[in-house]
Image (tube, rainbow, N blue to C red; front, side, top):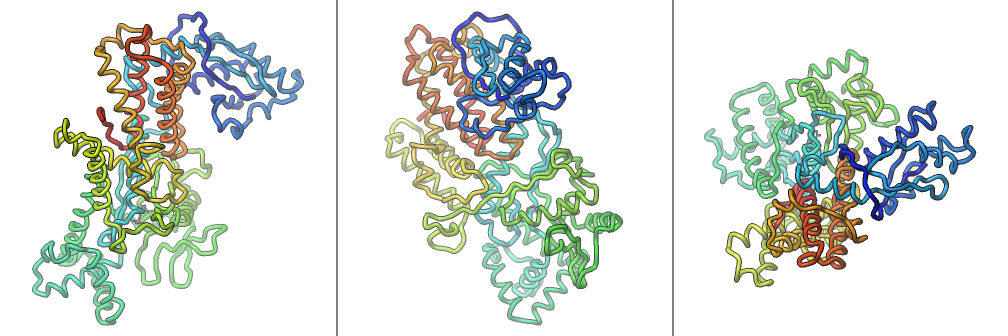
Length: 597
Ligand code: ARG
């Protein structure tokens, strides 16, 4: 069985209440009821509802049809479809049904129902369209740069993707713990601290100036570490002192962390991203307890002097205690997972890093399952997910780097996007009638929005090419184009001179023209798209929706006169609904909308 829905032609409408849930969920409810009557002995049939114009159509699981095909008393999928259609409860959603192809049930949605649902959203707010997810609390572990090392474009991707996922979950009424799992612990600190002491032997705390460029500082100390055995030995002892809590070492460590933090805070500020830092050091005290639990389950073995967990299907075991007795990335992640599950009671823990770390996550997730911390089945909660993303490439197809230096200064990158946008606005003659503040704000919204959108619109697992020219183009699938489209809708409403708040209450939305119906139906699919983007952790699904929405709007606006037409009120309401949904998309993508252009 395959159910297809499309916008209807005018009919009379039943006077029922508009019920909750996404369009898909509401249709599913109807079909589940019919299935209960038609095939009462089948309990777990998925009606597999999908919009018929959707290109995904051909690849959707045909679960229901495959399961039911040819079962008595039905002969073949066509008669099953007929029976399901006949048993469908009456609903104001449905205008008419028909059978198509090998047993598809085609549903034509009621035009009035579509219009009514949209108008209800305009009155009650878009929050009423939030999808319902089966979790209450989630951890999104994202951004997570390493202290004293560069915060590179990979961390920028993690920051942008993680923030969007957090926003989508928050919109869906999930409490999100936004965790910055910074690399603020480990052996590199011995070397950094020792180098700090060496440069400031008098013991006074180094001025920020002295280690301002932490990356250079890191490199210099690393060089020292690699070339001088005596230094190396001191550095190794420094780690021990630090871990033992020696005050002098603690202070130096905190100082280095603080300077590093100030650097990446600048990036977060520009991006409008909020994170709560709980770095690796935070979980350090929990490691022995967590390992003890795993040990009791018989998971930890000795191997070549280290303590390890062997994972089925992997050649190399997961090392949890190194030969020298020290802990590592994996031991910290196991302790952090234990903490998140037991102390923070998170039901879904999402990690956003480059795909290169997939193996690490797979391995410690498997260990946690074997220990019974997580259920063995992937569709049960509590659950962990690794959100892997590809590389950022330069236009030369190689790993992205800026011209001058080896590394990419993320702040400079964002500043450049902004200043290019400002130049474009000035070129469009905006300097004449806009204030400097308007210019700045718009350039910021568009520039930062462009960087974020260029990243988010791709399927995250693929590499993507960083190109200012592409992302700042005002045509095509870019934030610039979308933000301008939104601004244009706002200006249509402004130019009508009508009070839109008043119209929401007193006017009536109707969808007469086919392009109005297409747009209306697209708006109604918002909730299920957010739900899909959340469930599969794919922000590009939302980007695609937003882009198609603006295309549907353009088609509507080209073919349907708004201001001054007989349908003005209804069409203004449709404009407003489009603007509201677009703004929600922007919000979920972390992009600031602009209202004029
Ligand atoms: N600091 C790591 C890196 O830069 C990312 C940490 C991701 N989170 C985690 N819980 N392992 O690659």
